[in-house]
Image (cartoon, rainbow, N blue to C red; front, side, top):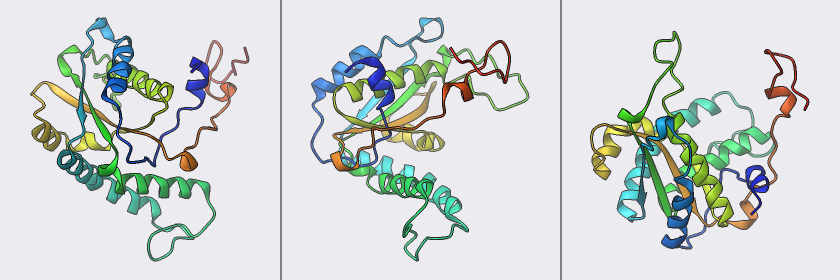
Length: 222
């Protein structure tokens, strides 16, 4: 697939078939994704490929532990939800919320779960002294993950990135034997997408709203 096409058509896949993912295809994705940039070329990323049903179920339960309070809060006061907590019709944002809830409920059934980690000693957290939440630390991991997502798209696979599992890091580390000094940075679900539920015509803000010229606020028009 042409690179720009892949960049424009890589959605978060919420619905997967039960068709297994060929390990050789996953290996090919990782073999290309590993050329992502990282601070000092330290390549501190590590990934656990989880296909064992019991471990997938355990990861799904940990994810659900974080998701359930979030989705309840998101739906509080929303007009249009029935007693089952589902949208009867209408708002696109709420339909997206419903699809993400479906994803969480079916997470254990996704063929492959990737637990993406990073070695903390390889990170240069240059914003740690600023009076705000740090955002720099994950930079050396997420370049690799983005390559994985694009690689999945190139191979005809669906993928979905979530970071809710990071809040359950101690339990995840115990489950998967992740050693001290490594942090859980993301969970990526991978499988064959259900064709009729796969969204590839994505909408995003225009360049002029997100890129500025020589200072904040002056749109970059190219």
